[in-house]
Length: 558
Image (cartoon, rainbow, N blue to C red; front, top):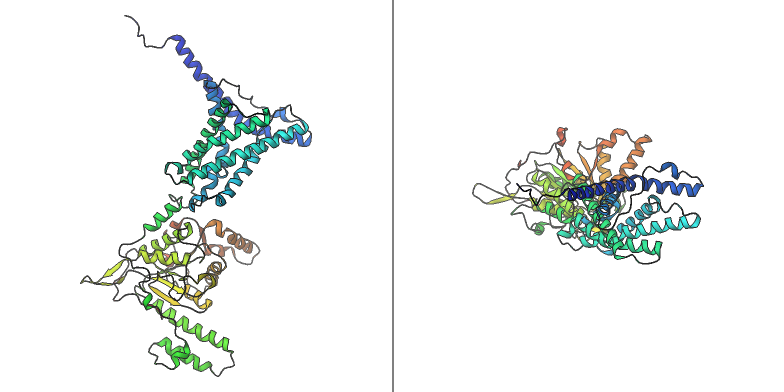
């Protein structure tokens, strides 16, 4: 019986085996040289030329890979091995080059030139180190020629790395779904990066532009390398996301998560504004009937100090402070569903809607309402608005047995004050996302009312400046000195609040505070920590759906 004519001949099998062997050996030689020998040689070369020593021959562990014809199996092996070795290095440096360098830009979608320049600059600096320190040059070069070659290496790597990063950012900035993928964006950006690298190296070494063969090989290197670096960044984002929140990488992701807390039938913005009136002055109440206990108390106080030696400013401070505290605390204590604990959220008035920090706080507040909290904030714009808005939009209507709406299942509380950077949101109406609005003329009374979270309360401090920091520190001070019942305190944003934590650690080290005081707060990125069960009974998350019907719409303090 004749043999199968389609079976490979012995010669064909030998050639195939030779091709695989050739690819494997070139890949291994290129990988180990690029990963170990090249950076070691680069560092030792610098040391030898700077110190006049000769240690390079002592650290020759592997030979450079043999050159192979373009398109051959050996060429492919060199390409894969060298690129794989570079990716091990980029696995360490991936946060500085390409898509990884600009991961934070995704949280703001700010892909413009001004926003991208710092990240491109950081990539260029990485390239300077990579090319100037880790990349060896011809061992025969001496003196100024050696230093010129090393400087050229550094400049070329800086240009190449910055091109890769700029290209990746530009492609992500298009918003096209496929181009926002790290692997795709980085691989595509590898084309111009490879072209830049090939031409600059050819100009530096040969005095001419690169040939198309040289360009093709360089572009293939950087395209494959870019794709690998993009893959490393995607893996890293799954394990340790830049935002600190698993599954949330971009502003769009954060907005979607915040939107998930919105309840159907929640109240409309400014729905309660017609009930909000300015706090009456004590002088007006003296000449009018006082039906409420806090009105009578304020009038009595005013009459008692009229003949005192206090200055006018001190009298106003004393009367207005007492009046505000009486009005405010009474309103908060008598809010509908007052059995619900309060989550107080502090944050900057300067942060705009539609930003990552705004949407993060909006999500925390909405989640808090669903978990059984009322939410309290400063009533102004920025993160205060985000807190009130998140809570406001998470409210659900409550109905009686006849099907008539009797109120809402929680409260969004705003303690409003006029401040220079809050004028847009504290014009007497607050930010419009409050079911209960408490007016304050004094900062100290406002701060004290915001501290009244009650049993089971929680404090959350978002990004902010002097005022936000002061509010957070005031809360910690009251906890430290046992002037307030135990409550968990969470500072959102490790990058933002790390300096404060370092300051506290320094205080503890010098004995200004105790080490135990460092346990009064946590600095977190992921808000799920806020809602995790806790050991202390006073800080347990309230039972879900622990709401009770109310008999009337939420009242507003006047």
